[in-house]
Length: 435
Image 1 (cartoon, rainbow, N blue to C red):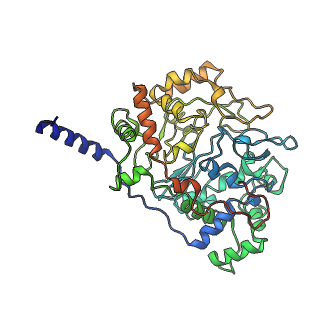
Image 2 (image 1 turned 90 degrees about the vertical axis):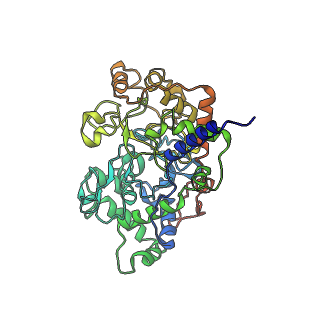
Image 3 (image 1 turned 90 degrees about the horizontal axis):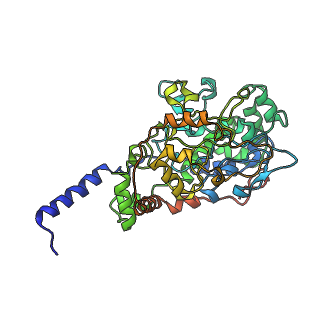
């Protein structure tokens, strides 16, 4: 049956309206030399940068688990194994879990990513002398090439991530005394370890020059160069569709129309990489130790408010990119949801989902003494999270949810999942490579 001319015009205009709402596939990425990238690869996988020499960047950001670690909240220092199989070391029990879910690393070298971490505590700021703003102060930003490079300072200084238990090694001893950048500081200790390895010294000679001492910022800049190169993810079926290089399967096409239309997903998940880089409160259930100072006896995480001090920022967290999202479970700032289907359904009615949340779905390696449901057992805490919620309920049928999941699958860049260089067989320190 032939459609009337008027009907054809309506369909054409609808398609144009939808396409006009779509982003452009025009991301700009940082560039680096092959030498610096390959050096950064070795450092990323080398446990030499942890206090105990047992934890590497790749321990919690591993390509086997979509550049995350496959668990809701990680066990960093004091853990044995990798991913969901990681367990606490009985001889060196961790003091607590890492407070937030390990975020994926895809496309962090793109210029759109100007703030990092779930609360955005590290941000590009052209008004600062070094172009970077962090609560740790201006003295902590000198020498970093980018925000991506500067983020490397945080894990190596965190006792539950890479530094280690208080006073158990030279790095954790320095950090517990507040010695970071100066003589005897944690950064100098780590840089000296790397400089003492001839292969690293030779590689750095080609990057910074043979007469320059290796600084921690040089190490961080190399890791950032590798991260930006290795996990660039802008060749998914969706990207190719945006560039006119192919269509999407029918389910994904319907899901895209919902995503950029009635479902309202793109209000926050905007741009080529599906993030507006802003912060929103969506009533995400809070599990684990929370984000608190050592003297604070609670397990809540107020998100962006910890950075800005503004009440309106309570329980707001940065909109995550959705690139390769089918491979980066669990989901949420604390990994509360183990499946993509579950977290999509949470977005449809956040408060109702919060109140009905079952903590059994979280993927939490056993940790003696851990209290993971402190907030969930307190009605006042749950109500505070609910009251901050910004998302209105959305009604979608089961077929529509399936279509949105199909569209999210079309955001997968297979090349980036494996990484362009892959996991090295060995690292210059001779320490075991997380694989």
